[in-house]
View 1 (cartoon, rainbow, N blue to C red):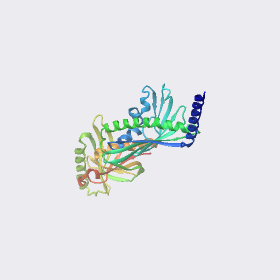
View 2 (cartoon, rainbow, N blue to C red):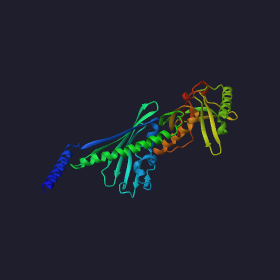
View 3 (cartoon, rainbow, N blue to C red):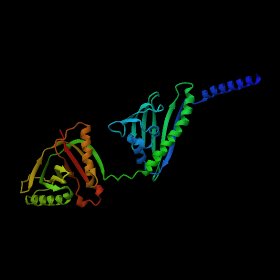
View 4 (cartoon, rainbow, N blue to C red):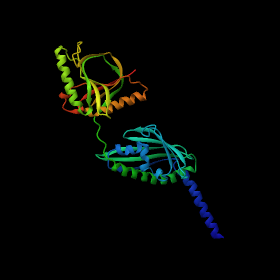
Length: 340
C-alpha cells in the first residue's frame, strides 16, 4: 500500500512537472531546415516555383501518389495553385497557392488543409558559391492555447523530418537538371507607344525563311540603287514589314524598306511607301537576330493579357547597321505591332 502511494505521488509529480514545463514552452516557433545544392539557384527555384514539379520531390505527394490533383491554368509563379483530394487521412483535402514569387530568390506558399488552420511556408535560394545554392525551407507555427504549445514541439520534430526529406529530393533533382540555354538577348521598353510617320523605298517579295539573309542583302541592294537614281537621302534605320510568316511551309512575304527624307517614285520592283504615325505595341530588343522570335511572342502575350487588338503585321526596325556591329549582343532592333 505504501509502495502504491509512492508510485501515485511520483506520477502526480511528473504530471505537475509536465504542466509546468508546458507553461515555459514558447507560444511560437519557426521551423527552418537547409541543404546545399551544387547548382545555380534557378534550378531548385524552378522545382518549387512550378507546382507541377512538386510531384518530383514533395514528401506530401509521396505519401499518396494516387491523390487527385487539380492545377490552375498557369501552374507557375505568383497566383498559381493546386488542390488535392486524398484517401489518406493524414492528407485529406486541401489547396496550396503560391502567394509570392521572387525569381530566383524566394517562393512563399499558402497551405490550406482540411481540419487545420491555414499556414504559410517559405523557400529561399541563396548563392553560396560559384555553383552552389543554399536552399532553405521555413514555416512559422503559433499556438492558439495552453496545450497547443506542446503540439508545436511535437510538430516541429515531425516537420523537421518532412522538410529534410523534401530538401534532399530537391537537391537530387536540381543537380540532375540540364543547364538551360543562355538567353539570346534582352527585351526592354515593352508596352504601348506610337510609331512615327515614315517614308521609305521598299522591295517586297516572297522568300524562303532559311534564306532570308541572302534575300535582305539582295533587296536592300536593289533599294539603294533605285533610291540613288532618284537622289534620295536615307533618313532613318532600315526596316522590314512582314506580310506573312509561315514556318510550316518555310516561307515569308517580306517588305524590306529604307527610310528616305524626300518623297520618291515607284521604279519597277522598288516602290515608294508612306506610313502615317500609328499606335503600336513595341519593344526594344538587344541581341542577335536569332532571338527575335521571343520578342514577337512577348508582344503577343502583352496584347492578350491587356485585351489589345493587333491590327496589322509587325515592323522590325533595325536601329543599328549589322555590318558595323562586331558583337551580335549589341544589335538593336525595335519591333512594332500596329493596334487599335
